[in-house]
Length: 350
Image 1 (cartoon, one colour):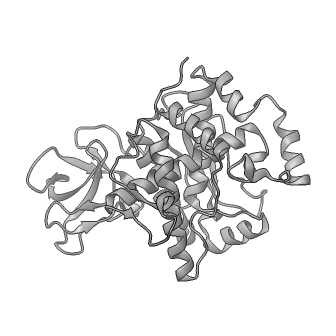
Image 2 (cartoon, rainbow, N blue to C red):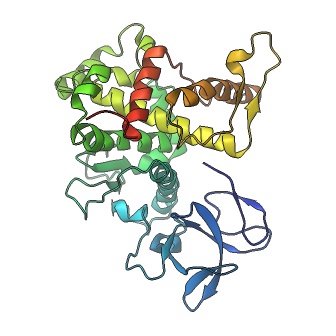
Image 3 (spheres, rainbow, N blue to C red):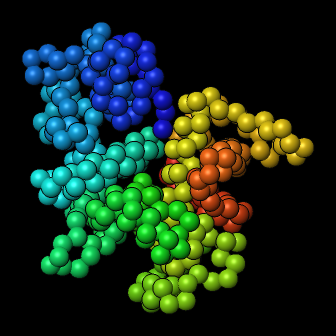
């Protein structure tokens, strides 16, 4: 995620900011320009400070769940991220509203990355298996909501936005990492397996890298929860859950690729470079002076990733908190991520 500046006064502002704390300007995110615009009201619509095309805010801005803009002449009620929602919880419940806002914050960061990568984003109103979200709360009358993907429909359990509940599940399930944004990135990986691999003519190539997806998923799931990950799984998989089935390996690797490009952009936006004061410093030295979304070679990303994550993890340890990125990317895992990179950038032969 890049840094932004208020166009009205120049103050550094951030992706979720609704207002500039220095000059008070109303801020809105313009997708086409990848900019936060400072806006002035003009007869029920908004015009950028200094002039330009007019906009309306997404309807979810009224609920303080979105700051994205829609061209004033558009007939859309919702922005390009919010229009993929099918079901939201009862927002008359204050706890539901607060948790849904957390989900929307993560989902908007997801869409920022997907849009920067130029990925196809058909909604369910455009095609039957288009990308769609249900945000569901548990009820006393029914079973617990399960986060997952089904033919383009991604269900996110509202309790994932409860920090206490999510940490409890992380510990109970023995996971290194469990975040709201991580869930979104993983589940959307299943959707893009359908779109880019299955429908994109890359099944054979994907099976060569991740294994045969025709293996029975139900049996694989039962085996994983009965036996756990195999010994030395870290040699070949980015996470224990990735060992369960080739679909989960793909989705986990996809999520980590999105972690990588988004975090590298943040580092580049801060002008980050590393030159540690150690004897063997070559592997931990990098200059983040490139755009990870347009990098042609995956090696450029992977060579920068180790120094960046080493630095961030070391800072976290100095603060007494868990590593931000507690994973080891072996050569096998990096080859899988390189496949994702080439798939995303349409570099695989058909």
